[in-house]
Image 1 (cartoon, rainbow, N blue to C red):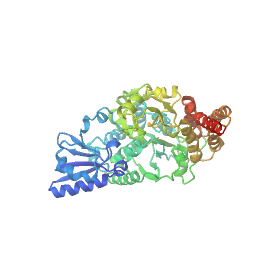
Image 2 (image 1 turned 30 degrees about the horizontal axis):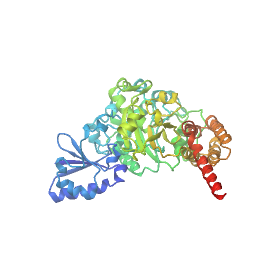
Image 3 (image 1 turned 180 degrees about the vertical axis):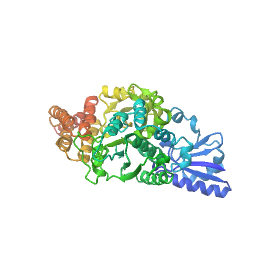
Image 4 (image 1 turned 90 degrees about the horizontal axis):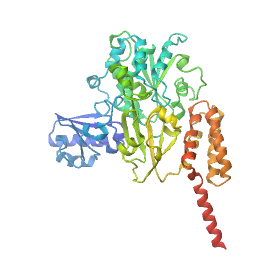
Length: 528
């Protein structure tokens, strides 16, 4: 039996993976081959999708990108035997992109059928959960604390401390919750989606371990509405997990009860903020809550709630399986473990790359990413989503470390990296940041709601040549007010991209005015 693997995630299907699968089935029938087709997640090398892998017995051989109309020619050339071909990119594990990664969150993504419970257990699934259920909750929390795991949603808060706070909180009736914030809306970020579509059981396992640790009996996954494929996979995975006894009553005969419910958001970016997400889960408009009280003490429906990001929770099973100490040995300083970096924008080889913290931006963007897609010089990268700062090409030696980024007034965030070549207009990008905030603000606080609108107007006056020095000073003051006065990170972080554009690319705020002035001068001479 020949085994062929084709991704089923939204990245691969958007470029024809389903059609490739149909073509492979047709060619197998026509040639009389006995072929087993397994649909997996993506390996993360998005420039090679749709990617077809053939198990040769000594390893998987990869072909990509493959179009449906060339499948017949590939099969005739020996695809089912792993034969050489221009589309053949060699054994999977020997490619630098795969060979150099340290895959913990992505360990099974692209390897197995994401909805196959037998394959999940065969590849190490449930080892962490079984060990956790055999331990007292406080010991599980101690293991996570020792690992140094910090929130991968962007804030970088220690997960163990958050869990201990929830565990110690009494609550009005003893009811506690675990909530996974899967409202991944930052530009250039897609790691959560790739994990949920490629290995959903690992997320369910991580949430179940968290529930045991903090004493929760119910869990919610809050998923953005723009991820219908992830929703379908998660819904199916929850059903399979219940049937297997991994969720529900008496999980794995441990006496512990915990179930997970999937909820779809309404398309509001602000619900990526934890308290807005909780408001939405309660059936209200997504608006930020004032803190304190924090969700760990007064969260969903007023009960203690552990709110974590997808990548945070997916890291937990490996920590419990191998021990917190082993996880802590990866990374640098206080940035322990691995991060799933996402390479996007004007980049030659976009995708996800998981490795330990400490790798430089240059290694990621110029090395594995291959530089810009346009071939023009790199001018800047934005790290941390639309609220992250623009880092100039001269600072690409910066290590991916929470503290190193903070010391340089940058933000690592969710690990999304968007590249720009030398044609980018940074004044326009600064304007977009303010415009984005005006569009996505929940409207609860004045600095965010009004400040962002005034920011757009002020930048327009600057580039239009209207008192540029005075308006630049006004823009700087406005950024201070938004940073200090906003209720949440939406308004508080919007000044990051604006300030970084003003600091590192000041010429872009005056270039248009100078060009306009020069053109007007030429016109006046011609008229004379």
